[in-house]
Image 1 (cartoon, helix red, strand yellow):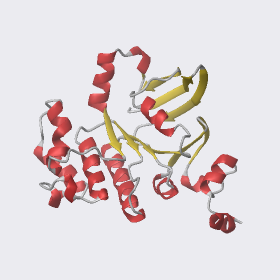
Image 2 (tube, rainbow, N blue to C red):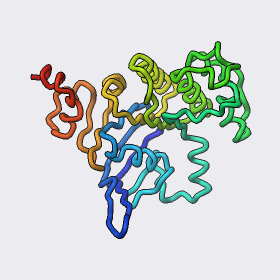
Image 3 (tube, one colour):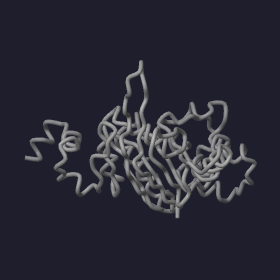
Image 4 (tube, rainbow, N blue to C red):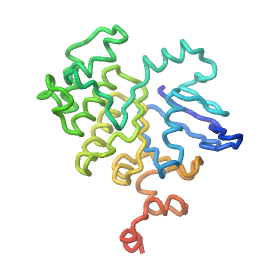
Length: 252
């Protein structure tokens, strides 16, 4: 089913004996094939939530289920296997190896797990991300958008059920950013992945926002889609969407 559910998910840190709440009782349900834009201000708790949903961090309380399997029921070996065989990751800084070519970077995950390489499938993925002409180039010869395409192709090569993207178009120009958003949309649909994209860019939110979660101060303040977000009444979200004085005038 590729479904992710969280129930009363909370995360706290203690600094000098003082509790700092990062997430507070987050309840979400994301079904197979959904692409969710997880948005909010810097420091809202987005990255922490993504890390926990991707089993890279543990909550202080609450639960997470992948399909019907509770993360708390898995030992470290099972958890590593879950991540390795079912999760794909795309980060804002690409994490490409400069000494390897594009094709070599894409094949890294398959080689690490000794997974058989289907050249036709790999070629198909490379075509889909528009990098057929860059196969033997090194990352230092690529633009920022092309590097992000390599990172996406690398994640997709493992055929993940779940794709976690942390600010995938950060630092890109608006046109290239939309291209990356559209690519993630297309691949999510084609491979029927459950995809979560962290973004604070309203262009991205409106581009991919069939499902939007807005977090503020570690609390889920709003959930909806891009049509609903433009008429939202939640103050924290309204201030986030209409932060520009120009947009505030347009809204009036």
